[in-house]
Length: 275
Ligand SMILES: [Zn+2]
Image 1 (cartoon, rainbow, N blue to C red):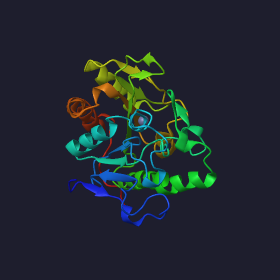
Image 2: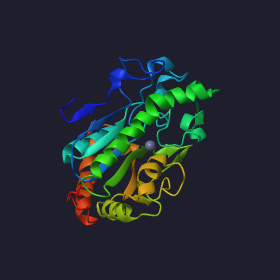
Image 3: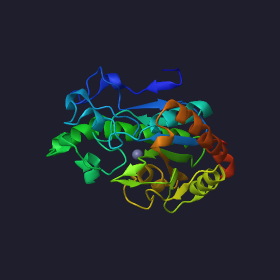
Image 4: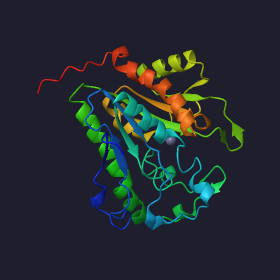
């Protein structure tokens, strides 16, 4: 850990029944005081389960597969944020515990089955079970994102919001050729830039592929960025490009050069807003 990484207040979890004081906090923030007007977030960065949930009935393969974690996405986000000196909020528990990129009432928030894998630990959950996970992980993560947006809005009125994910090269037996996915809905300010630059760099780039930003599943962007008009985009990197350190080292500079250029290209002013 470097000085640029600040842990949340994980020693004082309010829900000791799910996370003990010895377990990592639900998120960490890279460069929590940076004033560059871009916020990176990574919802699916970890395959960690709270100790109280054991292995959730999954074998070692399933616990580390693409259902549990966006392989490489957390390392990629951290690398970009550190290299650029930008802020990033990175989740520290598996999406199988609770998916921070879904509305809580979405069945996918507590996934019971996906890509041929049953998740026993998510069967027959009570509302109390769901609430405990939301209180311990989901809301602390989203509150941290909200706090960073509020802080950056004191620097510029509308900081850019970039959500980084990765996707499996094969889903339900079907191969996916797209290497970079750019997800957007009604605001194309950032997606236009990423699509143009990824293609110029030679990547097979999906415009709302392999997932669409128009689908209701991207809660993080909808909730934090779209509702208040922040320029935003979802980036999906195919996992085989970043599933080891060498891959992350190769892909990070591609995203860094695009992300670094965004404030100027979309006219974000860093003039302070009068108090
Ligand atoms: Zn994801």
